[in-house]
Length: 323
Image (cartoon, rainbow, N blue to C red):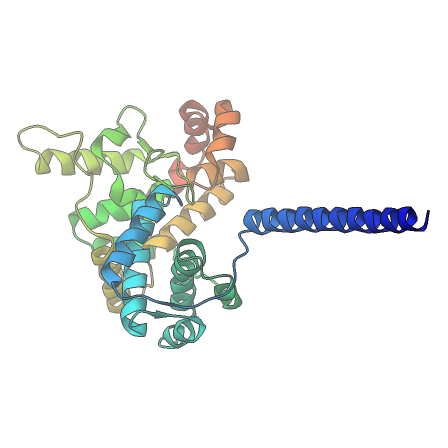
């Protein structure tokens, strides 16, 4: 009896031990699943030998996995190239800190950090130490909206194609990149509509449709007839100026005239004009590309070209300049 009791107790302890081990294994498996879901990886550093290959591989990752648009990828590749050459391939917390401290501009640091987070955390899987670097919140600035007469004075300092871009930015509420990426086929000359709905390839920004005034469409028709003497190519870009060149021109004229205007301010002025005309926020957001594709698809009748043309009619007179 004693021996039997002893072996029974031993068997029970062994069963309990196995049960505990099974529970621990289950807990560890569940923890691993949680870590995988939350993308938790140990913090680590990395020495990169082939800088060019790493940047090239990130480009593929950004395109295929992150689904970023081409311009965002180009900007990020430029950031990564500068960073990797600055740190000589040594990627760690100190090298990132040193790189960010190499420029005093808060906006520059924030832009660099966006790319570095994607690269270090999502692509290289170096852990979450990059998250310790926080985006600096820009201080709110009071924007001075120039009068229509000052808009005209600034406009008259521009060259022909730059004038058309100025008017298109002012009339549509589009971003500068969207305006410069427009093709001639994106214009519906019957209702003066510009279609930017397919401009963005990624998921980070949205764009839709807007319109230009009759005044602007007349200028565009004149410009196109002079530019295409042998017939208009619908696949050609509407404008041939690069963003940096346009930004520099605006800076130069701002300095010359004392009227400070940049391309983004014209988008702000458009929104102000819409507000003055008592347009609902949802229509202003649609014109300015702040409505997601999901919302547009679900509420298409509210955001159709016909519906938005009705809304645009309310603001067109406010957008025309006395030229």
